Length: 596
Ligand SMILES: [Zn+2]
Image 1 (spheres, rainbow, N blue to C red):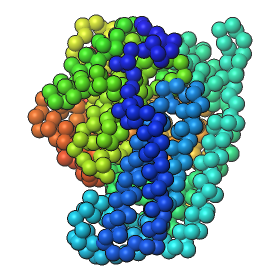
Image 2: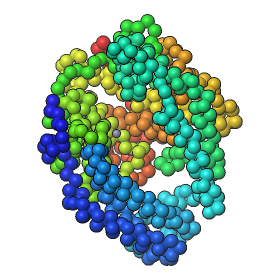
Image 3: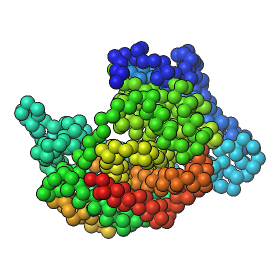
Image 4: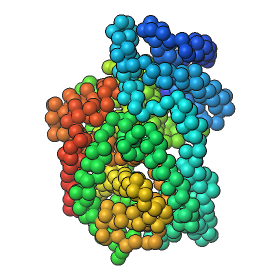
């Protein structure tokens, strides 16, 4: 494999061309100054918007500021990520970040002002001035919030209490990131050393079971010790959700969380119910796991280790790109050719170099193009990462091509659909192509484990959140014992009766940061299931599905996420999409059981 000791050595075709955004720093500085001037102009509209024309003037200036700001920020952020050690890049990113702050301060008067206008007046304005129609949907969307926005006085009180209300989340963050001290594990020199998160991720997949066990116990040690402290932060977070939802006139904390995506509560409940009705294949997989690992009792520390080792294939970047394109044929010629062109247009920063941000992501910049960061290694995992990120990139690209800027960004609810569809198409393609049994088994196992982690585990978390919020609603006690009891019951239901419980299992709730961002994780599960359902139909060659899926990729946020998905045939208000996805899972487990 090629390795690089500096960015200079990397061929330019494999590096971003940031000149696509700004030719030089003077151009960046010019736009920065323009935004500073725009901010002053925007400020002057506070208390001064009267009638359709001045409303339109304000919105157009704000749109211009927001567009320039996104360019400034994305440029600074991409430059920073290519080498995080460069202090001038850090300074530029800070400067851009502060500009964003200033824009939101200067425009914070607008939402309360807008809600003082009645809807009829606004519609009248829109009919008077053609240019206002660009903003129509986003303006009218604000009215959906009207009954949840309080009087000016109450809003001020709530905003002053904001910091206090978010303190449980802060406290948990401090415990979890700063103060936590894991137990000790034995290193290769037979010395006891303190466990770190990085070590845990490796050790919990170690083939030596005693190492896995030791790491598991060391990892949970501080969480078990802190169970009462963490229970009190989690309980406070939930009570705050409940309280804020009541104050803002929502029927429940769940409905408040679902409001911004306009998702009815049935979708959430349907997800949990459909998953539980189809839980048997997961239990079956656990039995296969026990058998394959050759253990007499399956324990929590036996659940993360892959059952099949990664086939040691060397796959160059060139080869990976070509394989990806082949696997995405079911998406049609336009998709494949467009994606092919990304490789030579320098949209992708491919190589790992000193100081570069780790991991992988896609960042779409409207009016320019998507930017994808990779740290490509010549192996199969990197092939999956490439295919995943290019799914996001194509979604950004198409939405930017077909939507006005205000509707081009897609919501988190639908974001992982595009990336997962690509991954599933890749895995199906590779399974079909390979004659090597070991590779086949590896791919099936990889797919099943991904299903388990992205779907079942997230649904279990979603149900945990639902139950504990209901307990709060019914004034039942929320303490370590109550949380542990709920968690243990759910863990057993989802993972099946075959697992022998260590004491630590029931404390799983103590280590999950997502519980401080209420009712969020279910989106991983709905996104994943939607993608599985779609990919399954795409592979069958359904013309209609291909057409509607490409339309979906072009739709940005032009409608609510559930509506956009519905047009592809995925109606999450009904049980079918989840059932379809789970029948795919069932087939995978069956196939895997025949192979091993
Ligand atoms: Zn992703």
